[in-house]
Length: 502
Image (cartoon, rainbow, N blue to C red; front, side, top):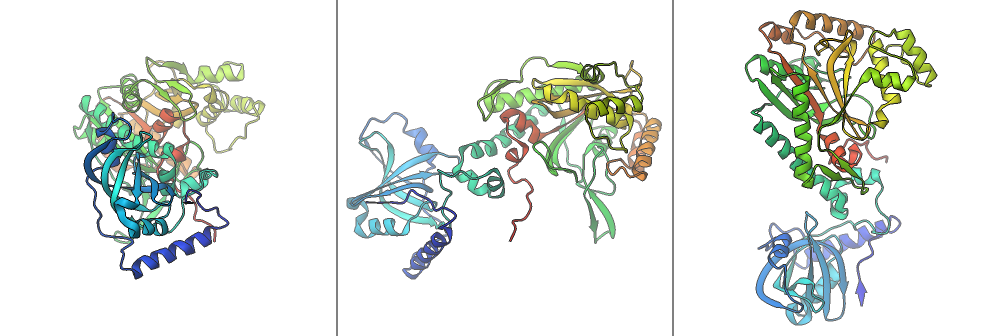
């Protein structure tokens, strides 16, 4: 008896590669195509599983099918061979090859030519084995694609870095990767359905922009040969979506990619997916309701409940109405003294120093307040929580708070200790907006690489009249983090990684 269920280790990988390439050459020499244009396939493994759900032990259905899959287990005996076929969604089915059904030549070829990882087509009768295992009893088989590399060893799981770098292998061997990859389109569909139910219109806005804006973030810069000018990769679609609202698309949203030339960690990626929307005649409260519906409906779509189960087994309840706290109340509680938007930067620096924080001299007062908040309160915000009322000097596109001086009508939504979404009562006064953008430009001139620029075309659009509105932005990758408990690199199918060292 021989077995081929022990994939190669790194030490013997070169030998495995040599052997498999020799097998490929042998197949070609014998007139067998290792990479055919097409193979027989009448049903998916999932369809077979769904059709034959209640067969007794040792039953022959009489139904002949052609099935395909990747071989992830193989056991060869004298007159009977067993293999497990797996298709892309993880569905598996046993294949059985017997001497009396396929003949000696085909059985010997199966034993010698086929390795773990190969993709095959098997034609035969759907049966249950003597152990009750749903199977296909082959009368013929064909190679669909020869794998020249062995699959990773089950006893030595791939590291996170390897999983990210070789996501294609990760999808083959790890169920969690397949679930995460298939969850994203479900979430995307749910987001669109929720927006459609609220009469929002989906649009597409430029990813290459003459100037960056819509968020305080460092952009990626590129150059257009056709236009002989510098361009920026989009950091946010906000200014273009607001132009849509001016033009009469009063409820608008976009789901697309943004790019920010910043650090990468467990919750940040230089390239990420974002949903952003604006609702005319709404405000930060009404857009918070929309955001909650988006998240809760996404949870229902993937889990059938507002309570989701994370990859580590922990449950998170995203249902009901969510807690609200004041940013400055949270800071005050964290430092043990009353802090408001009018607290001086010198006082904030004293608090930050006591907390052992490193202070960037370029930080304005509001930025320092936000950093203190993140230091003392962010990690505690596990259940969905709206943090209300942010400083005006870090929110140049947001309307001033109706009662509280120095604060704007902005919230950030925190879940599991990270920021999931943000929402505003949008600033619609073009005169004040110009003043805010000029202040940003002055910060940029002093070396703030995240500061916005003065976008004259956007200001011109505002001067035609922009209705009162609420707006929100939410990272799709972070929404998947909230639903799964995974880090951002596990929710992005192909995150950016550095090239492998030679």
